[in-house]
Image 1 (tube, rainbow over the protein chains, first blue to last red):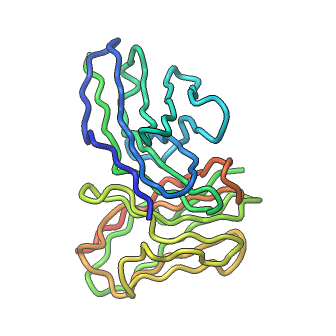
Image 2 (cartoon, rainbow over the protein chains, first blue to last red):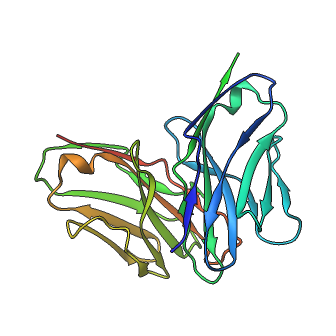
Image 3 (spheres, rainbow over the protein chains, first blue to last red):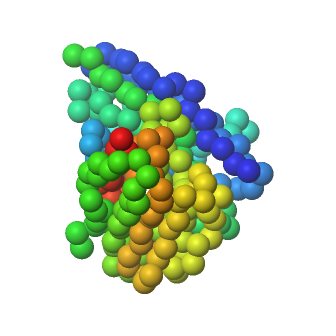
Length: 113
Length: 114
């Protein structure tokens, strides 16, 4: 069985400061990895994904995540956060060869003015 | 396309009543996921379908829950009888079958069982 662990349930950070949201997964097979963002009272939206190739992937709004196979991690980072980044962030994993999609418990990012 | 459409957006019902949540997939998508979101347990995968066929329902909490896809574009999640601990936000998501495609989520149904 696979699982996704997001160790930090809440992360407060000051505006323009850097942030890292941690994600670790466990799986016996190769995986694809995703980060989704959920704004209040909305569904989840894809932020970025790792499928293959370069282990560093980036989103259009300045977030990036790096796939580390040896550490089974896919941490999300942003060098300078904005108030508008306040949201809940979910890490997700799909097993290679299966059309499943499992999520972590989420990290609530709060950007403080 | 209007995206994944869920109805109703909010549902308040009494314990013991039957509840049916509905989901319309994006046209052309052939995979459908149902999730339940609570503060305590986060986002739980309940069941998913490929081409109208249930693939994995191991996340369905108990026999009171059932899900169907009567056609390629529509799904229902039914709870009978409902209990207060079923209160949560229920999301459905759809995508084209294949691991490199994005899953699109509906706005969710907030269920309150009193």
